Image (cartoon, rainbow, N blue to C red; front, side):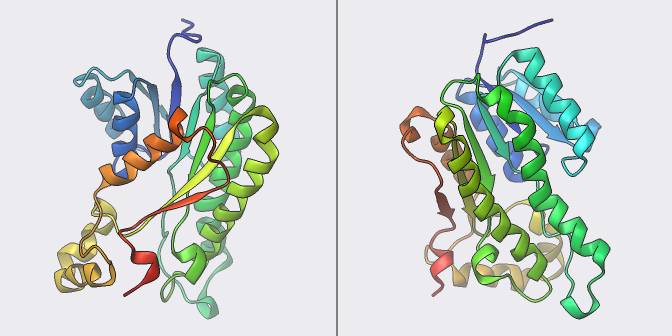
Amino acid sequence: MNDKSEHKIAIVTGATGGIGFAVAKRLGKDGYTVILNGIEDEVGAQRVEELAQEDIRATYYGFDVTNEEEVNANIKAIGEKYGRIDVLVNNAGGLGGRSRFEEMTTEFYRKVMALNLDSVFFTSRAAIPYLKKGENATIINYTSNAGWNAGGPGAGIYGTSKAGVHAITRALAKDLAEYGIRVNAVSPGTIDTPFHAQIKETKPEVFASWKNNIMLGRLGEPQEVASVVSFLASKDASFITAETIQVGGGQALGI
């Protein structure tokens, strides 16, 4: 089967839950055929079913974004099937755990860097030939306040990896501008997702206190990040590249 150019194509990595799924749903409602990526195949199939019930065209590709060979094979398969990629959302990433530098293992260091930075490099590099064939083609990455303030205790290598995402976003934007491919990033603040489920359950008072550091006085919702990603992918953002948009209710300034 070949679906070339029938619909605009958006790939969202790490899209089986949380912000990633909200982004996939929003882009689907915007009219994209959405390719969900993840590593939990059963959940991925379930998410595709959920989107289908809302008349969203979606399919799931299970692969590990930190594995170069898997990324290359799957992005090529997607690009060849559809003949183009219009939007790549590098949503996959995470804290990976906490470790202070003195006791940090090289394995932990490499795991966190791979999850947050290698993944962006691998997927972007593989997608570029197909983004060149897209319409208003764009890459959207995810950085974090930790990329500026280096993160809290034990999150230093997470912050380091996200600083790398901030830089690679600008570097990719410079590299791809001649092809009309835009590259931007969003920097979500504290968003109420399953990412925080453990602390919400075990230390509800700590979870509740987080809103005290947010100017708007509340946590964000996944859809509020998705709406900014939707904007950056749209023609309304056609003259925006190499930028990072904070989606954190003023959290980055502190209060």
